[in-house]
Amino acid sequence: MNNCVLLEELLIKKSQQKRRTSPSNFKVRFFVLTKSKLAYYEHRHGKKKTLKGSVELSRIKCVEIVKSDIIIPCQYKYPFQIVHDSYILYVFAPNRESRQRWVLTLKEGSAWQCQALGQEAMGRNDALDVRKNFPVQ
Ligand code: 4IP
Image (cartoon, rainbow, N blue to C red; front, side, top):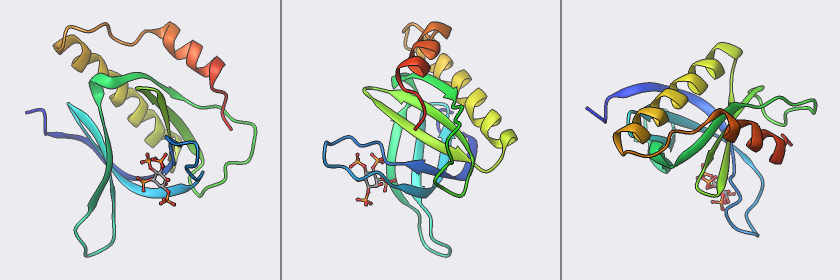
């Protein structure tokens, strides 16, 4: 049940820079959202996709659309951010509708997970704080 796919699409992600020496780069990844996690894969036509990373929905603190005045340095121009653990995953959708779908479904999914695990769901104030503290680059 938790493995059933809610959304899947090719999107672009920015490296999360988990280490001080991590590069800042952008990769096209195949994103798959289920009721329990968001996973992203390297996707090459005709080849088996390789898992590159995943985030448990219960670890997500905030999901928000990102507003930016600067030029977006990748092909997809509709960014949103997923704040989890102590990282921010910036993801770029190809159009406004796609971004809206991902943001809403991720918000719902993480709220379900938090409820299921008896945790406090992410609140509106978290989102506002995060946007203040992590302006878009
Ligand atoms: C990698 O750069 C990729 O962008 C990784 O993304 C990213 O991991 C790494 O960030 C970054 O160092 P190189 O391929 O040039 O090594 P992906 O996993 O999609 O390939 P994240 O964590 O963003 O998935 P760090 O911070 O994990 O090093």
